[in-house]
Amino acid sequence: MANVMDCLVPISLFNKGQATKIFNRLKETKELFVLKNNQPSAVILSPEEYTRLTEIEENYTLLLEATSRLEANGDKPGIPMEAVIKELGFDVKEL
Image 1 (cartoon, helix red, strand yellow):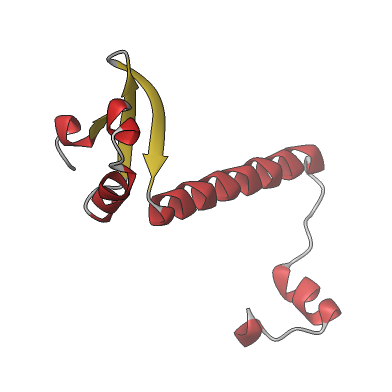
Image 2: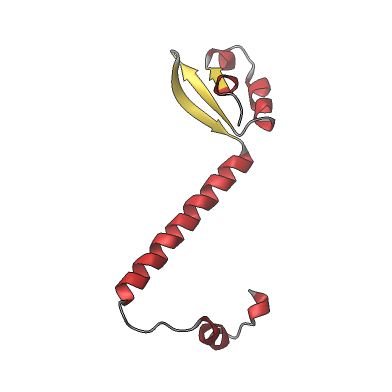
């Protein structure tokens, strides 16, 4: 993990035409914290970090939905995955 101080970017650097230099720093770190009046004002993420975080969020949402459906199902028996795959005409290797 990068030193927190290395991830801080004063907003004044953007006003001084250093945006390209700032964005190039994202090759070395996953995120940069933009400071305005010495307080965190925004976070800039690398595309890879943004993708990673959105995938985590999506997986978590799916997990919550699956958990909710299992709880709502109660003690009723579920449908085996093999039966669903067969009904849909898939092959396990395709998954």
